[in-house]
Image 1: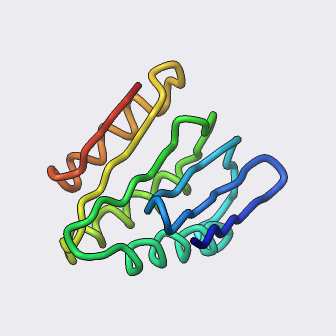
Image 2: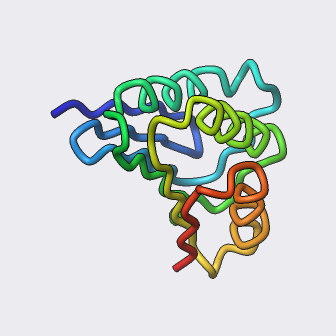
Length: 119
């Protein structure tokens, strides 16, 4: 089992290869896609490490804020995953965090196979 965490002042992103999940916590207010590059790399690493036809889970339920640059990175990841289409993708959100209801459900517009679970 391997766990890899990227963290900043107000956030952490943790990839657990045993559970094939990425958990986002805190508030992500990075300014540019370059600042989001390590997170993008972690998403791609998780995608590549997930066996064919398996489920990769992105858990945003503890992420209070994600700015437009971050939403853009997640959206690009969903598009890239759709193009390769070798795995299933599940996105977990929190109904009490306003931005998640709209932004996370919009990911299904990019790839209809994405499972959205707003709890």
